[in-house]
Image (cartoon, helix red, strand yellow):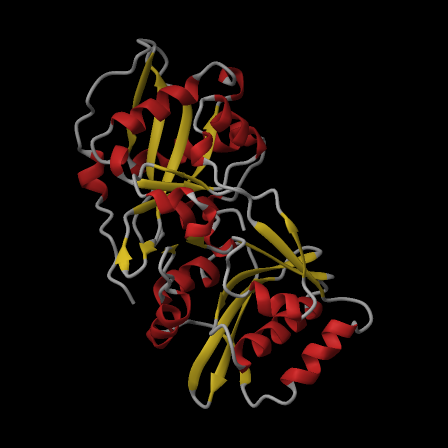
Length: 346
């Protein structure tokens, strides 16, 4: 696998800010991990949902890329945290070169301070920070945040929408399903459950996922954290084997009415992608899911084979947000290969 870009928390945390907040009532600053519990409380309050502390810790403290880099807006007179935005170190590369990147999320504003411009103070601090100003950040903004991005003249940072594809996993056999079964029954690859990824999968990931644009190299350590260490989500990992060697793998989230394809690392042609897709559909059916869904950029390498298996695709409501890098390819959805495994809420 590619070497990882270094995410040194102390270097970021101790970097002097260039100037004070433009509003004297507030302090805008990086937060220390000792403040994470206060940040969790703010996120719960802002979203009106109490997230298990184990899920917060999994994402903020135990990410193999490093602890979360959080920006907070604090009221000076009371010391209360009014706004926060987390930046999670995220494995990203451009072609064969590691690229320093954060996954941004959990933008939270205290309910009684919403719609008063508080997030703008946090955003301006990002733009003034000597390190964060030149570091790429990606995110998956909801509808409200998309509106704010457009409102403040940053529409360039909101890429064209991803495509969403759906395969029906429940009910009677469909023509496409029978065609897929007929094809894979003539193939010799076996598929086995994966309970832990080892470094033997890293070369496969590099071989099947690397390309000339932006992508997210998920090594074994990342995959084990992302799926097997998650405190509340249920995932199934499946590997197609050619003898004893992995020829491809996928990960499926098997909760709810629709299963979600999180990872799909396989060659574009040959037996492995069809065999994996068959087993992913079976995993969805075994979990009681009626559909297997996936979202990815329009240029994702596996859309053609998925279409041939009967996938129905449509424009999704998922948008990738990119900022903080001068690279022109980063602002074109055609410049990316990403899947739900690169979203913090999937």
